[in-house]
Image 1 (cartoon, rainbow, N blue to C red):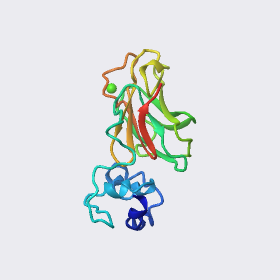
Image 2: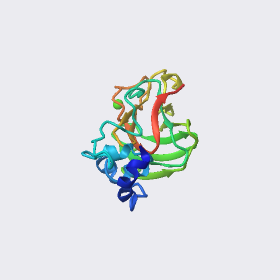
Image 3: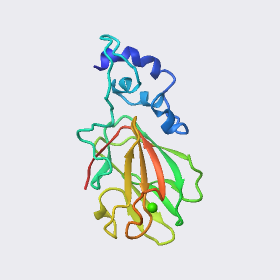
Image 4: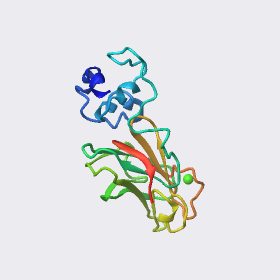
Length: 205
Ligand SMILES: [Ca+2]
């Protein structure tokens, strides 16, 4: 599969070696997807045909398998699927009354942004991690002193889910948090980030 599609991918790969996070979601379907491996991305482009067979390839995605996906599942987490590629995390701002710090919490603690302070669109590059590593996020709410974690509700002191992960296509996800004790209104947009890279939503504990 890969070797047949490779000639078609080469023009995409040239000059596209870096993510442009500012362009994020709108443009992810074009350039940045070529950073991630597999010919699946070739098929992400509408109207792409296999260079040998001429057969249109549809419905393939390197980071999303409808058969095993756990979108919005309370026990789902973002898990690394390739050890040779890093990640881009972009702070998407806060609409909340509270002020929170947003962090990549595990396996490495990296500040993503602070609500009402960090400019929206501020990007952070994150290094590579071993396959199977969960990227766990957290918010530290300045107003209340609570810290809430992505993943299962059992991680949180109030027993509620505080983060939702939504796949937007082409190996990019939105991670949004609730910042109130007791889970708030559960729309998960009090403070948000996007992350792109070789990840997959999988069950985590
Ligand atoms: Ca909310």
